[in-house]
Image (cartoon, rainbow, N blue to C red; front, side, top):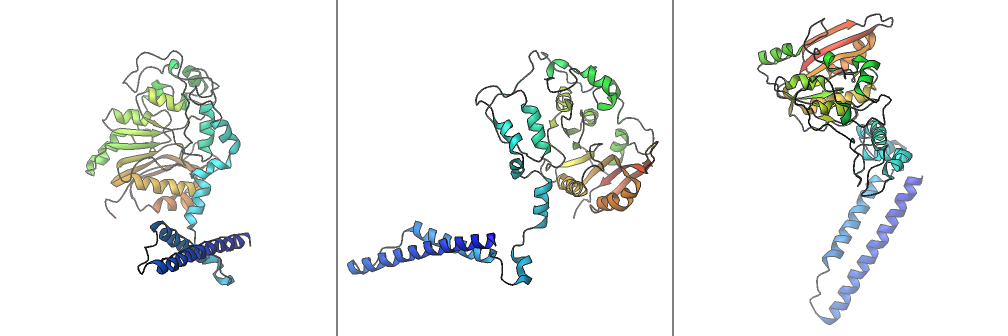
Length: 372
């Protein structure tokens, strides 16, 4: 009812404006005829306004709900994907859904240092779909005494604490993070062996990956690692002259800083963000532990099809240790992955050890068709 009344009001205003312009046009013509036989042309800006109003009336008439109940459903055919994506992914209006966080993020003094909690607020907004963030005019904070030089070796002995702002984390050093959980990715002695050894069918060592690509006459030059933690996959591929960008978030630890300290490029974007890469330009996309069953199915579907967007023909999608329940993998995730129509180069599953709920892992290497 409110929508219909609003449209009627806009139509009424548009009709009144049209009549006023028409009367102005007629009166100008009559007065001119009394003076000269050739009336001057109507000003261009009036003609443009009249055309714009008429177009608006035509558009509003088409959008106005029909009185026939049978046609109401099709009167405004908004794409269902747009409505769905607006609830799942970061369209700018998502910022308005969190006015408290947004107000705190934008409450700063221009041309001075950014507030201490800027990074935490930024990540909270990003994870809630407010991305890209509004731009600000404050200076980002830097560590008080950063190291004077940085290594080009992505597998250096340790990461420097001096290059990180630790105030926002429970741990205040990389050693603390390593002690709390050696598997977080900050222990570089452990990371040095990742992606290089074969323990079971779920593993795909990088030398084997490169051999598969070479056998298929497919060159690997550019890659994207989604949810890549501290960037170990990108670091190892760098040793083979392959450039890999890593998407990562600072969920309780400085993953972005650690990736950068290793001489790699971290992309600070959430999983629901459209990948910041152009169409059909990368040779390989790896999805690590961050891409798992906890992602809503529809969000995962959008993610997989965005991966398809950035992969070139003949490129590879590597689902590395995808975790789900066995029944869900067979009935839900396998058909979802199958929608891509990719060639299965490797498809290996294995039960999770000590699992009583039928949990399984999937490692899949899939090749995009060369042409469509």
